[in-house]
Amino acid sequence: MDRSFLVIAALVGAGAFGGVLFFLRPILRMFGYELMSASAARGASAEARGSAGDMHRDPDAGRQERDRIGGVLDIVDLEVSDVMVHRTKMRSVCIDQPVEAVVHDVLMSPHTRLPLWRDSTENIVGVLHSKDLLRALHEAGNDASRIDISKVATKPWFVPDTTSLPDQLNAFLRRKTHFAIVVDEYGEMEGLVTLEDILEEIVGDIADEHDVDVQGVKQEADGSVVVDGAVPIRDLNRALGWSLPDEEATTIAGLVIHETQTIPEVRQAFTFHGKRFFIMRRERNRITRIRIRPADQA
Image (cartoon, rainbow, N blue to C red; front, side, top):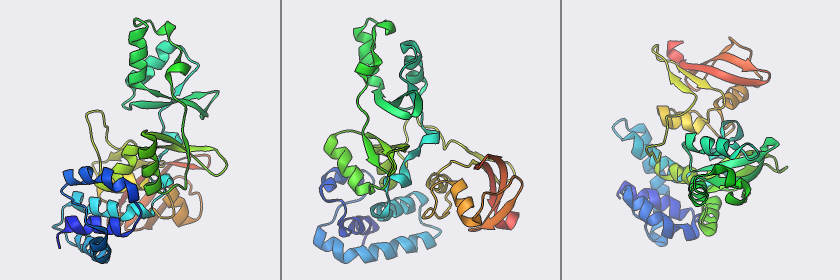
């Protein structure tokens, strides 16, 4: 059976997507995949997982195809917290600064939508869409002083960090929006999630002319990689073709802390999962910079 059918069979067989299949069909077709009927999918789900495992063992299999298959199979087990942009990496704008400064921040950002905060960066009071801002500027004759940002912005939508990705995808489609603020069980802001974040888990990176490389990752001439502690493990795996586990931690610093069961000191080094981790910088209880190289080159 063709792998394209097997991959989607696992997705449908899991029974997790329901109403979003209509939306996914044209997207997946662009990448060479087709949706099977539910009855056929149930019988092929197990075979799909076996086929994906074979591809990971096959050095001739394309990396992008492996990643897409893995993304489709994994998505039913993921939560919003697994793919969100953490609050320490979010771009946001102070709503109380001069409108000219808000316009400048929006123009300098690679993102279409930006959270607006007041008093504290964790107190999100709105979401500003660049198109809405440009429309308001046009209507005001390009006089920014005539614009009330609070009236241009939309209300923020808050979602729990434990929401499953299929449920969140359904919610995005139902509300016809692409952007949500993620909060923990106490209502504290954790980060943000977008429709694109979820789709990229299914089909791989969706790059456009405004995208940038993974921030906080620098390849060194000696073959090592210097990584900011807050870089998500999934982003690092996708960018470098690695397979570091992300079940117990979201960021690379979290992985080190989980494996060592401590907060390491600067200049300490550890080996696990085939990699050697050197702690380069620590700020209070946060690991902020790590050098990683293959364990056999340590």
